Length: 140
Image 1 (cartoon, rainbow, N blue to C red):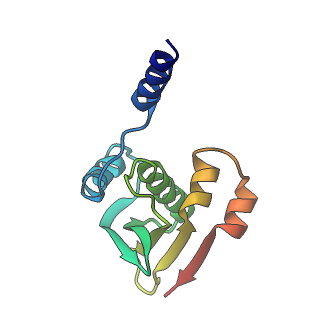
Image 2: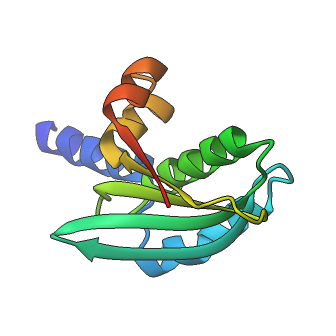
């Protein structure tokens, strides 16, 4: 009887677990994630790669200068939401924001994947903590 209960618990936990997808599957689903929301920025590029042993989920978007904060927030949230379903966890999320404006450079946001999930998905850290400790910005 005891063994039956253990097997039943293992099977039920496996059934309740989130599905896990390969990098190829994640990459194929990402454009759909952006396309289904009419307020999403235009996704112009996507890659998943390794750098120095760290797995990176990278998107490029065409941002509206009047909504750049919202566009960035959507893109980072999309990475966190999609990234939680990856078979192998990501170490970093990268969002490259390009603008359809002459003279406006490119903004790059790099976010620690675990810390971003703690903020956006698990609600374990505050916005201030996430903004100060988990992301960095560069401009070109």
